[in-house]
Length: 348
Image (tube, rainbow, N blue to C red; front, side):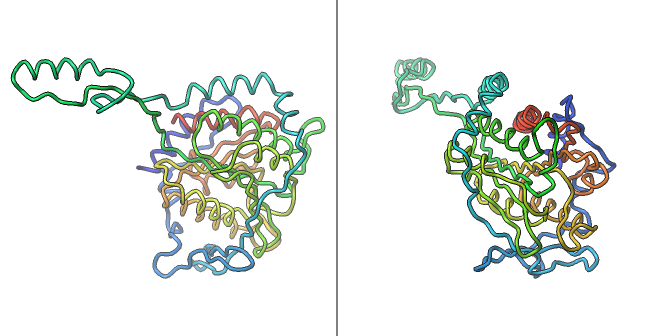
């Protein structure tokens, strides 16, 4: 399917959200995201990811040389640590009205059952098939045996991976006694409720890092894991390190790319632009992240970024395209807006 059309549809859907703001720039998403630096890793001899004892090495794009560095960054995957068992229930209890609304609205988005006619067996008679069969027999034609109706659940054919920035900058205070990371965690718990109601396959990965050789990717929930375990891991997330965004996106894309769903949504939740202890805080990080997003689109994924960074209009259009992200000026509204973003993306 056409990823540029997908990005436009998602942006149009999200532009109606009162709390979030879509930033638009000239040019189509393809022009912005698949320009002269949109070179898929692995083609023309460029390096692809390589797994070793220290982690998974991913290439990074050097815009000055117009080529890949390898190894660019090493991602160290692992499970997210467990937090307090009573944390998630307390959050859900505090947001009871929102949780009820989320479950009700997302239940309406669940794929319904599809009726299948002319089946060899089933719980119901297919009246149309039965009438046709009677007419055929009266006309001297042989009758058929597919006279029953059945149903099966419809498939949306969608997989969702939520990539969450838990770098040290999320330790900043937002309102009251809540930090950005606290608001992110509350939003994630409520989002997991919504995803559970939807029934689509989904995963959550949190990331941070300390330099190009130690990008940590913590699995909060893998696609085949149950929600209760994930909620406890959300409780254990704490701010740490930096935001080597390109490596995190490549790692998340590799995991999402293994899903066989026709539509695969990569939803990034971040509080700032790419940065690290080295030159990644400069244009190098912006260009590498832009390239990582382009690679994700070339894999058939649909990346979308929701950020609480007010300065995002200065750099995100070049990374995610004109309608590939939304800016949330009030981080404390994140739990409400995140589920609305998901609803808009799913229905776009």
